[in-house]
Picture 1 (cartoon, rainbow, N blue to C red):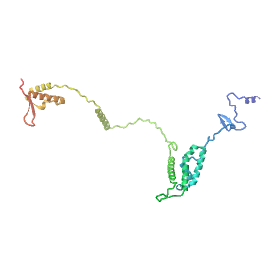
Picture 2: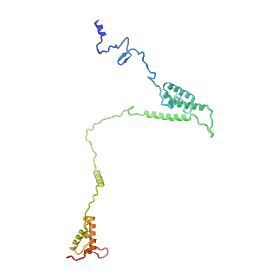
Picture 3: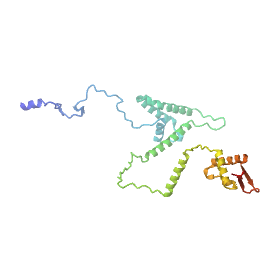
Picture 4: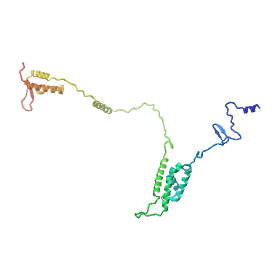
Length: 281
């Protein structure tokens, strides 16, 4: 009796639902065993869809129907192919009207071609036979088949991550880095380039120097007092720059204008001499 009481009173926190009640549980719902389906269980009709053969569009379906029955693409039996195509469209219309709308345009085209083939053939005004109503459809089918085969060939190529993985190897660099050697000619060329760029940005500074013509006139007179005459070029100090030479030349012209010095030349192309025009005390 005590043992029976222990079986009826489970310990606190323990699941009291038995795993087997007159049989084996076939499922668990939120961790609890389920031995029978609920009576009010509703499964939507489109909860599970299985597509045995999926087509990528109207041309893909039409090409499938032609190739499956070994029809000649250049001579399509429109009546048979159109009937099979419309049967497939009616099947998908029952389940997916939006998807079926993509195939309705092709169905209308097939029906038009079929009706045109039933009419008697009329020759064109030029005397040539009229074009086959299936010509445009055949051209589109052949182009689509070429693109589809090319896509299959591309898909058959090995793809990284799908068919193979790239091997990654980590090598620890424990050696000291080795830098490339620099040739002296490269270093000299680099230095020359730095100097060239530095000259392009250097500042041009202009300084103002006050020069007196009277002062240079006095200097010329003092130099001529110690000599009877001097050659013209000896009175100029080119090391002091162009401004000083110009002012010195102006001073000499001013002395000649005031008749303080004489500028003489013995003959053409002979040296020019300068002397005092007066006798110093």
